[in-house]
Image 1 (cartoon, rainbow, N blue to C red):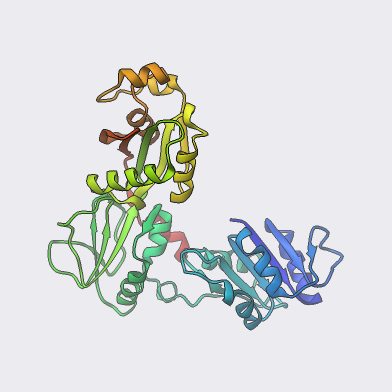
Image 2: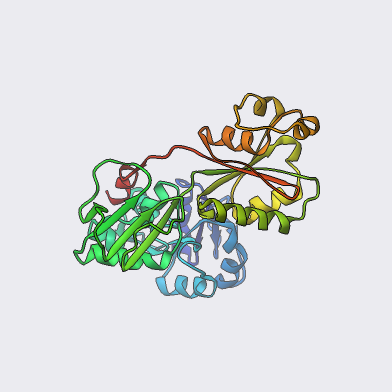
Length: 350
């Protein structure tokens, strides 16, 4: 987590400098302070500073009044799954306040960390946290799941806070004891349901309010001709996933042979999907057992399979969808084994 720490007053600069000595942060001060040798002193307005550096940081610690911080960030906010964590402290260090993006951004955890370092009182207002209730956004973050429909989260969290039950339908094993208020789906209708699946299936149960979590466990293998049009590859992948019945949100990585590591369409696809692009040598791919190969591919690359072998190698699992050929494009899908657990989220509620 990359953190910026900002202070406006001289007293604030003293506190900020003390924090900067104990945290890995970039420090921005309105007033210079002798103890902050590595701080950046800014001249313009706080709004201008935040606008300039907003996209460079995952979190901000603001030593100032809450209202000042609110006005600085308000014009830049997008959505709770994209906004940075914002924690506010008063210049005397009495309170650390989780202001924005408490769960997905990590502001609540950062608030607790700052409070432990400084002796400040942590102020956290997230309903699930203060009521010691499970939080599915934290569960998703801890288990590397994408949240498909974030708007549904408020209904699920609201149900738990108000004493209602929430059911889980999961295609993945869940280790550990489920928290209070959460039960496994038993085939009965449920008002509040959480579906955990990498597949898009008509037979999947639905509740009045249904939250979809997509574990990132699928590895997309790809081989293609040189200078393939990115739009053409994008359409092929979309069709491939639709026809195979798997969610694009469950993609963990794009994979190919190292001969394609600079292929523009593959780099573009990985960037658009916000997933890493892994490549392997021909020798590495040659050791992977695959269902089918191609003599043409072997003549060009030295190995019988690129897409299927790369996906399987990266996933360290089994092939879900073998070699599927489009015009100048070959795709395959492999899956790694995943076990979800509630234990990973317990530290966030201590």
